[in-house]
Image: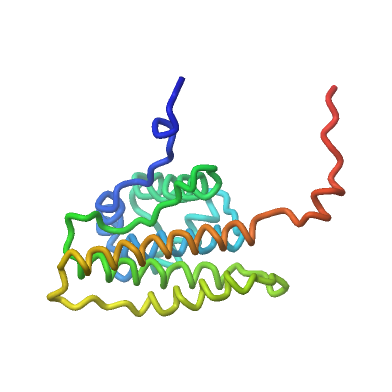
Length: 199
């Protein structure tokens, strides 16, 4: 019998995604912002086939074409794993940000970039008629503030560390809240759908 942790979906490594972007000559977009953008689009209800996804990401990264097959596969994997994490029952959704070994100031900056990307992606795909709960609207406002985050370059105390982890966890939960709100089937629609017939 497999334990939950054995089957948990893990995102590609931050440095791996960073290297893919560098090899493509993408300097304007960080891995954190790219993942935030994907996460925002998925949260708003967008779904892409492989060709559309790569086209959308090329526009975002301001490149006319992706040169390396490894980059295409890496980006598709990032998309699929992000969606799988959102849909998992164990609240396993993660943010693609640098790990704890990096300087606090870099991680804070990456978290701000992630929020920026998320807001852009979410805004691109939110339907006009989509009514968000007060909690979700407040979450979006908070993400907009966190997107402006700037850690003091001297900050690296345990207290600063704890603050950043707390903010990061809040962002993670806010993203899952948006996803759950925008991707559930309305109750009246769910009732109308006839059960599948077995042949």
